[in-house]
Length: 158
Image (cartoon, rainbow, N blue to C red):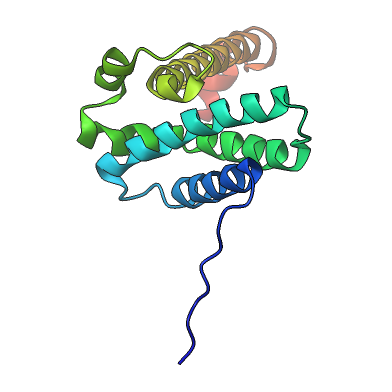
């Protein structure tokens, strides 16, 4: 029978890597997370604190920073999924009232990010629609003024 040998965490960097691995797994499987999505936000807080303290001690965390940046980018791209899942825990506004996080911990403000992105997308669609209407109006006027056949020709064709 094969038994797994438990590995003890040797350094604080090992703890950082372990939390980073957990966060990577959670971000990859956001769908169906429900109230457990709060754990993801808490782990991100812990990662932030741990990273700052280890870098203050002079530790080189460039590989871990790269992994963390990748997780942050994935989280931004899947922000709508996370905000939908976290409604099972009362939603981000309620969680923010409980915890009062700083603005630099942007993951607690993903609902605002999603709303702003939605507003921007809607505004872009509206601007595109208006531009298309203006171009069609210009084309209509230009056709009637310069290219349309005269009334006699129209009468003969009809």
